Amino acid sequence: MTRNKNGGIKAMLVLFIAMFVLLAAYLVYIIDVYGAYWFASPYNTRVTKQKNAVIAGSISDRRGVTLAESDSDGARHYSADDEIRLSCAHAVGDSSNQTLGAQALLSKYLLGFEQKTGDRLSYLFSDEKRHGDNVSLTIDAQLNRYAYGLLESHAGAVIVMNYKTGEVLCMTGAPAFDPEKMDAYLSGDEPLADGAMVNRATMGRYTPGSTFKLITAVAALRYLPDAENRVFVCDGPLAIDAASGKQVSLAEAVDSDGNVKEGYALLKDFEDEVHGEITLSEAMKYSCNHTFACIALEIGADRLTKTAESLGIGGEYAFSELVAYCGSMEKPTTDFELAWSGVGQHKDIITPIQLCMLTAGIANGGVAMEPKICLSVSDKAGNIQKRLTSEEYKELFRGNEAEFLAEAMRGVVTGGTGKNAAVDGLSVCGKTGTAEVSSSGKFKPHAWFTGFVADAAHPYAITVIIENGGGGGKIAAPMAATVLEKMMELGY
Image (tube, rainbow, N blue to C red):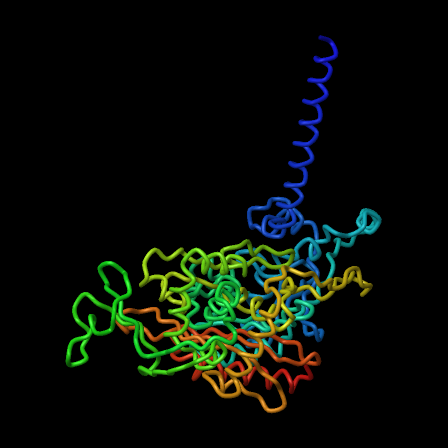
């Protein structure tokens, strides 16, 4: 009896220990994933108290250009160059942490939370106020300023990453806020453009349009036998019964005069193109809606959704130095929804940084790196305390998927919808997107381009989104090319 009782106690003890270990592991995971976000919150009283006790360190770009610094009284000041100040606003952030820029996400360095105990104690015997550490960002202020200027009056974003290291070289968006005017914004004395506080590169949630065909293509490679060699047939629009959402014959949906009958809808290609026999790679090159819609219908909603989820759509996007909204894909329930979802419409949603990471994963042989904005941390005397450490985010692609997509994306630029992204001397690969956002046609589509340079000497991925800009191939692709040309001029 006593032996059984002791055995039961031991079993319960083992169970409690196991539960404690699991709880501890979960807490470590949660802190690792959300720690930067929680620490950066404007409601973090610990940070608020530290701001009153410490002179925050300076922030500079990767070339040493000062983006933010404190005077002897601790007041924060920003670049005197208006264009640099605005173009880097979302990357740098504001001193009140209303935005999730470096001032919030890297405040543990800027406010000296990571300083050694001895360094902190040395200030106890000095009249000098303690200084936080200085942070050098991965971004290039000149590149940000240039890309921001290209956006002009358009809302949108440009993001450039090193797909080998995860360094974010450009992260700019419009409209932007002026960090020097933050108090005036909050008091209402200064007008603020709608959405100016939103970092569109990381938190803009958009319909992906045809850039989603990268995901549909992966689903084809995973679930359709010999998909890379299969010949599909694009023979015109797909007809859908609007009431049931089911695919029907074109003859049933169109009258003798070629008009769509009431109660039916057509999924068509750009300018009613008919591509005939076409391979998966060619369908990517010409962005064939018919082919990718048919692939989605053949694969089914479960498999398409599963593929999207495996590539990070709908997953967590909280990193050690960056907070980003995640995309989403609502599972289609009808043929109509499924067909449109396969071409990046329906209710598919993605963020620019998410698409850029997906693209970077293709360029990097299937592995996406975690985006990084902190190049180094140094103390007041200039001694380096921390350097960039690259980390893998996730292996997104299997087998030859990344290689196939890279080759197909090269075709998009050499002779397809992305030819305006071509840059002399660079092997640019990419995918265009024209995301319809208005069924009435009142608003122009969002213009997308996402791509990369297939060159180990220039390992860069770029994503451009222009809200209501029009065609991705006409608007976003040439902008991406211009940014890449500027990068070469700057020595990248």
